[in-house]
Every structure is written in C-alpha cells, then in structure tokens.
Length: 118
Image (cartoon, one colour):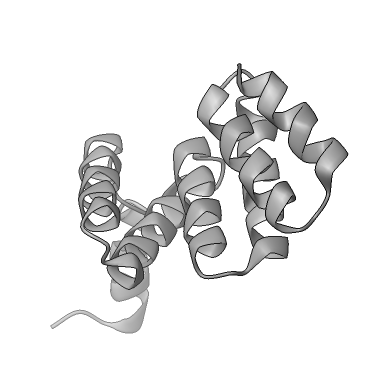
C-alpha cells in the first residue's frame, strides 16, 4: 500500500494529458460526431482536445461553428477569432467568420472575411 507521499509522486509522474496521437484521434472522433449532427458529443470532444492543446486551431474553429449552429453568434465570433489568431491563412475559418458576421448584420466585416476566404 502506498502512502500519501508516494501517491503524489506517482500522480506527478503521469502525463498531464493525452498524447499527440490521442489528441488526433479525439479530434477525428469529434469531426465524425459533428458531421453526423451530434453536436453535443462533438463539442465535448473538441473541448477535450483544447484541454490538452489550448491553441488547437481546428478545435477552436469547429467549436465556433457549433456556436454558430446553435445561434450563439458572439461566442462563434470569439472562438473563430481565436482560431484565426493561430492560423490566419485558413480559408474555412474566414468563410465561417463571414457567415457569423452576416448573421449578426455586420456586413462590412462579413464581406471582408468572405474576401479573405477567397
């Protein structure tokens, strides 16, 4: 039986989160759920990815898309903006930002984002 000190040392020696390969697998599962319309499950997995890699641009982007699909436009702008901060050259990010800004009636921003997507 381990004492408290040994248990703490054992916990500290364990990896903090999933391995990069596991993160890729979790993300792939999230995308499958998303495509199947199972948004709650997809969101949960995207958030698991972000707990391991907080700057995972694709997860930030796709969480933004889920927020858009749920009508949470301000959250969508914030999440897609964070994704763009990580990868400003990703055309889909700009395209989805354009859709969200259009839904908010922010036409100048929507047009600019759509042009950036092209």
